[in-house]
Figure 1 (tube, rainbow, N blue to C red):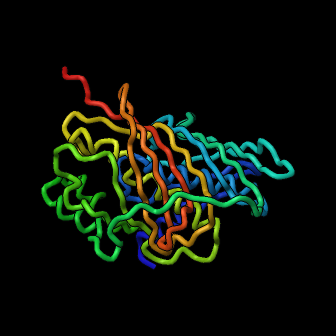
Figure 2 (figure 1 turned 135 degrees about the vertical axis):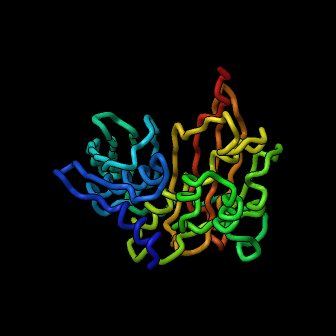
Length: 287
């Protein structure tokens, strides 16, 4: 197990402080603010600590304040309902005495029922594509030293995309994107942890799809972006040690916000999860 994966798996683990109260940490070198996928994953894990024999089928969350990676996060779980078919939990993440994030999640036991799904869109196979982390390291050679420190680290989620080489180049592009992704090393046999880490990875590269038509990216001078909310629906259990296709599109940007939809397919074409996110996308006013 590499240090990057060990740090990811360990950092997602929580310390129980009280019956419904948990504490999590952020690994060193992860950037100036906490990655949104981390707090999604840890909040889902906190909810799971209060749920027995049911699996999350959906979550809805809001990013309220930037997370501070230097201090722990406290997660408070509200056991909203334990019903005959569904279990509902609310999780509030707190730092410096203020909410930074909240999540609502619903859980249910496995059931048989109607089945249909959309087809996996056509596109290149993961084996034909470059590792996005390698492309990032190449582009980061001329970046500021502080950025090189966190952008050049080994990434726990392996990603491959057809236009990874053009990611940092300006110029409008269609508001659609695809990337293949998976955990770089084995996660283990716990199905809940595969789901938690899939939720972690679901926050990756989404907002950049909304940027594509406008020829901007994370380092465009004056550009400001941040995730505002995030929703995820889990359709099937899956093994996130295996490659998955993440296809997303951005049907709208307006009012300083961009909206992005995502579909996650297993390599065999099974739709395992759907995602929606709205994010801040605006240029800072000139002074």
